[in-house]
Length: 266
Image (cartoon, rainbow, N blue to C red; front, side):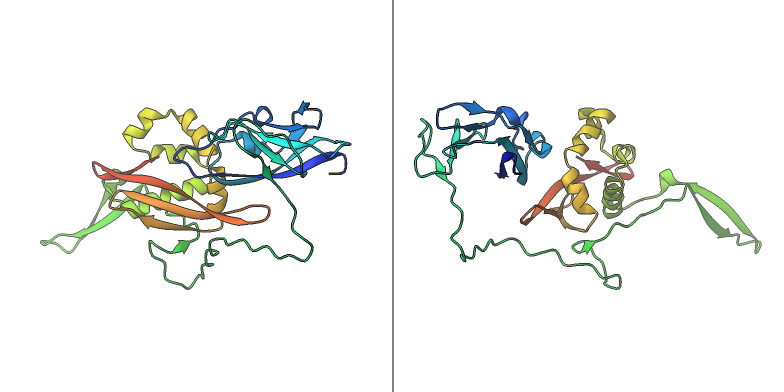
């Protein structure tokens, strides 16, 4: 921290598609009083991933003797280049006036309103679809024994039923998918996808897509909430803890009926 110019960068992205700033070193720079531009010497790699919601991380530049510098950020889609100045005088770019970042006065209290924390789940509480629930492993037996009694003779005959004939509800199908997501079992997740989704993704490309949602997976470990949107869509909401705040993140999945089974639409 003493050998560089450190900045805590917060990116807010709430558009329909994730914000792409990769490589981040090509999108952010420090401009000194002489107009020379410097790329960051180091930054947190979270900025190289598709950005959704709120993302925070540290960015480091070469130590500057003259503190009359600005930070330039481009690629956000709204402005060609946005200038952040930390002095009273600064250069004005052709796209928009710079934003002046000033530190709070000593003793001044800053309050940030955030969504309420998701309530902890007690083991004795009843659990329903709309509760925040911990991971539950639902195991399926490969065979189920069914006992029948003949009318003519009091003899128990045992037959077996293959699990392909076992009906699993859409709620349990979604729960199994979330459990596999938490366990990072990409193969099991892929097996539960709908035929249309598997036409869009190979197993390898689907694995890469899941890795892009690692923030949601980490949140699922602590708890989550399921909200059903109609009959065939479900919104999974969890929390993401940042350096100085906490925010809610979510993912909406489709659950469609295919023959005797329910399948997941990613």
